[in-house]
Amino acid sequence: MQRLITGLLVLAFVSPYLCISSFVGTTNTVYNVIDFGAIGSGTVDDSQAFLKAWQQTCGTQGDNTLLIPAGKVFLVNSITMSGNCTATSISIQLQGEIVAPTKNAWVGNSLNLIMFNKVNGLTIDGSGGLIDGTGSTWWGCNCPRPAVLTFQSCNNLSVKSLTIINSPKAHIHINSCMGAIFSYINISSPGNTPNTDGIDIYYSQNIRIEDSTIASGDDCIAITGDSSYINATRIACGPGHGISIGSLGRDDAYNTVEEVYVQNCSFTNTKNAARIKTWPNGSGFAKKITFEQITLSQSGNPILIDQYYNQYLVQEGVQLSEVTFSGFQGTSATDHAITLNCSSSGCFNIVLDQINIVSSKPGKPAYCSCINAHGTATDTVPDCSCLST
Image 1 (cartoon, rainbow, N blue to C red):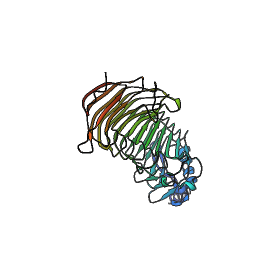
Image 2: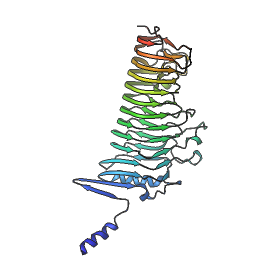
Image 3: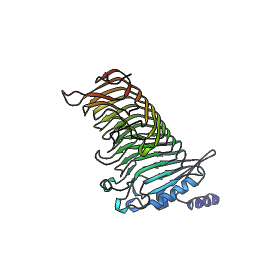
Image 4: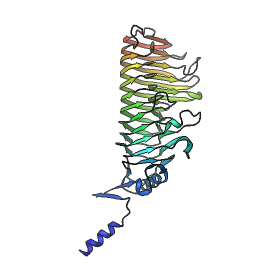
């Protein structure tokens, strides 16, 4: 009995932020940000507590979980959670709310609210949680504005059931990552907010985004150079500027995008739907791109290739080829249902198949127009005979 009492006393003095469950050869430890000094009042800055909890989660051997508990609102300034971790695996459970400071109270890096840098094998579950970017204090500012969540050089990443609202700029940046799955993501900012992209993908490969709802003031998803093997499935976009390839070639850059597959997506009250946009004087290529099984409801510019992005004269530019638009159904909010505006060097192997897009305005026609576009159109409404072979 004396030994039992002694053992219980020892356990009572174990550090309160360690919740350990042991299995054969495995230790699972939960690090709660409250136990590192976080208040969760929504007014006191909890940034340092988050960083201390992260350092312990990352720097301790075993399968570790960082817990942001329910029922609290955590004010967090710009923080970076860096990798090269000792932990075997890291999970983050976002059950409470994270709120960004207002513009006037912002401290630190102006590019990101929360950044994960070189963290491999990270899993984030946002079930029940929320990140509020407090974007309304930024939207009228002609100044650098931060993204809410950035993943930099993070491989084998899994993010699910995450809600982000009111970002100052983009909601999620995926930069130089390889192998990531984003599922059941809910993004919401008003449709008139500037540059509030839902998810931006840069220099990344093997990225999947699925079963998600995105409302923003810019692209719901933007896939830029140099990215490949990107899959967007069952995305509900709107309001916003659609799902875009690009922009590519800005500031004379050489950019490449290939193997992009967008399927079973819906666009409601969007400025565009399926868009490819490139700048003049840039170079590179975009190829092997498919948009299929797309539902439209009062979407402007449902199918758009724009190699005249923000310009009027284009010579060669980024080369476009092997682009397929298939299975589009619904209504266009503009007269221009299909616009294929290619550079003087032309776009090749463009395929339109099983397209039925009509005007959302009763009695008004919808049109297809082409410049230097080459390919085939079958079973396509409106008629797109301007697409030459």
